[in-house]
Length: 349
Image (cartoon, rainbow, N blue to C red; front, top):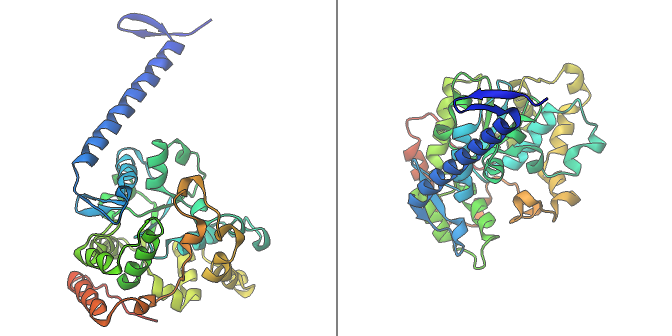
């Protein structure tokens, strides 16, 4: 016999009630989409080349990477609920995100896989650690994220001030933030975006916009300073790393990363060479030469091939591209913007 529920008009079946709830949810979802679209349509835009879908959108002081990225962040602000066990990798684009995804995934799951059959050998790091805004923009649902086992490994390019309250207030979730010499960020971003353009963008244009603060999820200095200050205030919640430090001494910083993630290496693991094995597995040289990372692409990143995420992996590559005057101008800008923060960049290696 079908169950029934009370309502003002009388009695309705449980099946009918579920349909009503579903319809209300769909209506609410549609209203949210319309609200977000109206907001997005009103925002200032800056093109990055000859493709409008690459336009940057300015929202609350930041130039977000694209319309889908902003949709994902807005959905994240409205619906995402952090777990105390969540581990979130935060970064600006082209700051070592791929490398850190590989390291974090391998450290956390080191007891579950043997190196000869490790998932990194057959999957790109971006397929193993989910980008929050990308996932939410595509699915417009958090149900898939809710199904992930703890600890969830997530990533975001979202500025700290735009993160949902559940991630920064009264939450035990931990952040790893990685930043990089801004001169290398300019060059790496320029190469990366040009892969999408029918006509390559002049470096001078990309450099000028970066110095104006117009870059994906930038200004660079505002993005970095938000996470830097959070790391000073809540060091148990936020680990702040520099790409150049990781390159200079990966053994020290991989151990530091494992300790922060709550899974420090045991003495036996160190004696058995576990740290070195993880460094080797996740190295640019190893990952870039794997068949999966040479050409394959996925539906979630159809614009790019996996090989696009592995260009050089060097520190100081900017010297091949920027003039002495350009480098000095950007160094001066960064020093000016970060002068009272205690944060500096030492480069190159």
